[in-house]
Image (cartoon, rainbow, N blue to C red; front, side):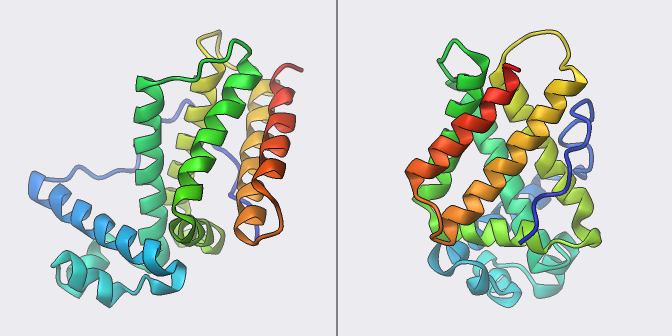
Length: 206
């Protein structure tokens, strides 16, 4: 599996590509994502079938395709939704470590533990990210921007990040993604994931 595409500039808002939805459309989108979450949590990537998602969410199949052109689009959108929820939770309860590198490691381990609670769901979303082609690039970029924002927020209020710090953030994101893949495939323990994340986060201090 390949890694997530490179991070774009964090100056671009994470919701830049999001269309403005009416209340009815937003409610329909929530139902679609809830149905997708249920199916993916139960059976992973293969369990998410567009017809089943449409039936479970109470929307016509054609309507579902207007919102999400493919299963990959749908699961990447779900990853974005999960990251937005994590970001909101982190703002309410930010990391407590004094050292910026330790705060980033603590934040990413919180994200990892959330994935750990729903391994089939995590596997489905990560597969979608790795299978995404150019048609999903805008959605994947949004996920990447959100991840960047979460990491930068964990580093703490400071001057705008330097090019070296942004480079470190890119490496941290790729390492986190790779660690998640190796854990999902059974090739790394949780303890090893924690060691790898803490090691790469030390790049911030350098």
